[in-house]
Amino acid sequence: MELFSKIRLVMSYKILSTKQHLKASGGPKRILSLDGGGLRGVISLAFLKDIETILKSKHSNSDEFRLSHYFDLIAGTSTGAIIAAALALDWKVDDIIDKYFELGHAVFKKSLLRHGYLRAKYDEKKLIKELKKVYGSDTTLGSSLVKTGLLIITKRLDTGSPWPISNNPFGQFYNHNSDGVIGNKEYPLWQVVRASTAAPRYFEPQNILIKRMEGHKSIQGEFVDGGVSPFNNPALQSLMYVTLDGYKINWPMGEDKILLVSIGTGTGDLSVQNSVLAAKHGVKSLLSLMEDCSVLQNTILQWLSSSPTAKTIDLELGDLAKNLVGQSAGLSYLRYDLDLSIDYVKSLDSNIKDLKKIKSLTSLDAPENMELLFHLGQLASSKDIKASHFPLNFNLN
Image (cartoon, rainbow, N blue to C red; front, side):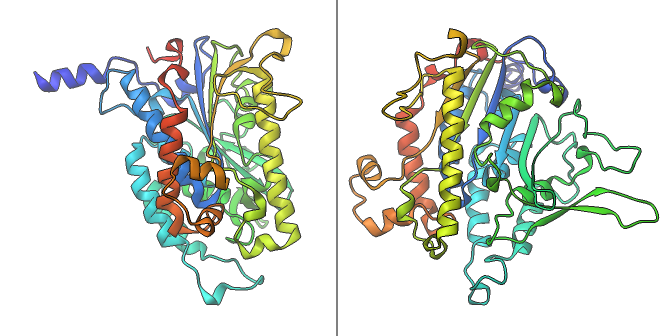
């Protein structure tokens, strides 16, 4: 009787295939978007843990519930790509948290042999080993193990163009081309995620076989972190991906049609970056540009949407609540992030008094900060995320 009850709980909603998730069905659709941000991705996991708990409670409270059941597309850049791919493979958030801490300590080990600017700061072989353990060395982007739509943002350095790489079966580049072009579905999943995490200076670029040419040398694309494109925050790209005609998904827009949940990896005053690299004007400018891109994307998405989490953009624009395009919302939008400024961190936990430690939290590659970042993420999540943010019409059927 207990087994029958459990099965009934699992089947209280229909579990869809990847194709069904991505197909324009006329019903409501849901997107999860995960920012890049190095080891600060542990902040995203703190938010995701609460989101999973809330959505699980809305769907019979079954232990078999997964975020891959709820979200029809999961998008990620860099560290967000690591988490997004694991979620798309049906991982529970708690299991991803355990693996993320393990990966962070294994990969981001400082080495005196890697100081200077002539080689990458970290050994990509360790990262590749860990990614293969998580996803499997033979799992491809088009594998049936990937249970929902997955969009990974990377940048092809040899052509200078951002590449949104997806398991979208309707897409132009999904299948193998007669001219020898390799279909996206054949790309090894670990390789695509590794490409999205190949942050310049931190890791070497990742090559992906793009085209086989008989009698000629095959074409390899050289890929780097999607964070050096405009889409370190992939939320706007994910919305474009499912609505613009060229991507061939064509979901209809509307406040009751699309729910976009965007999760950051923490924002803070760039002046307190504790990295040696941040002292260099070029790197500071790049970090500032990445933040500007994220702010612009959030501005556009708040402008297009109805959002209970809308934040003040600036003193002139406010939160754009009265400026919806055409006076009607194009989507429902949720944005969750953690302010890493000194004042806000101290407001979350008054026991944290070490200013040097707080300033160090903006670092992208400090495993020793992960526990505290996760703790702060949990505090912010419990304060910011509410069950009412997820409308009933977006519940699974």
